[in-house]
Image (cartoon, rainbow, N blue to C red; front, side, top):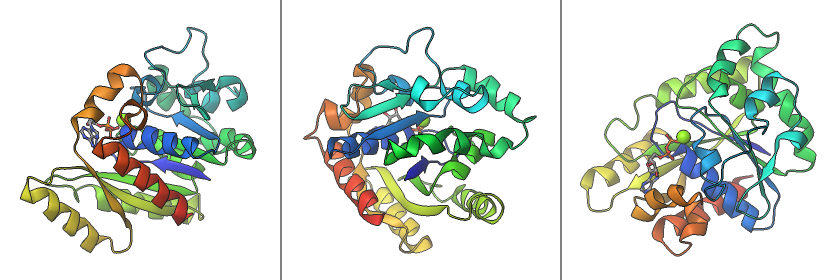
Length: 253
Ligand SMILES: Nc1ncnc2c1ncn2[C@@H]1O[C@H](COP(=O)(O)OP(=O)(O)O)[C@@H](O)[C@H]1O
Ligand SMILES: [Mg+2]
């Protein structure tokens, strides 16, 4: 099963969600591949324990555009069972280069297909836009996870994302289903946080995961150690929420 984690808004918790759900599923004994499809490479630095990919490391751009195999590009992470296809800044140029390719929307799908035999779970961390890289992720994916930050204007942008999903389904990937919207950075002390959760649930009945991820300082600390928070501090509230969310994601199939 290939999951794209997407929302064209930046800073809503895409990368945090991707690396933590992927880490939880790996910890449950499944082989998981994490594909960093954002030129900012936050997912890459978030799972390598402070190391960087080697200078000669192959990246998602090589896999999408230069015929590099996942088997050649993947590297191990600090999480046992979780492998990574890293990103680097070259993905920004790749997005431009892709435009002229035949079958430009299917490059990632074709590159990932051979890896699904080895990895029952693949997670793609998308960039904060609806560019061709995100479209490639939606075309490659069986399921979409949409992190939504608990703040004003949370709904803004979601209808455009849903329109894009509908277009991708109609033209390129009829099998794409929404696994769930995941409410992130919930602050129980503010009234707005709870209001936003209710509003999104009302707007997207049945699509919002029961689990709500709380805002938690341990999440902001973990990237500087290059670890998902579920590994950095497994007992903290956000780590427990991500454990729960990953069980929901697996149960939804
Ligand atoms: N539950 C949380 N509690 C506190 N900070 C969070 C939480 N989730 C994400 N963050 C922080 O918010 C910022 C944006 O999150 P990130 O996952 O990088 O979003 P995106 O990938 O959508 O841009 C990061 O600094 C991250 O550490
Ligand atoms: Mg990100």
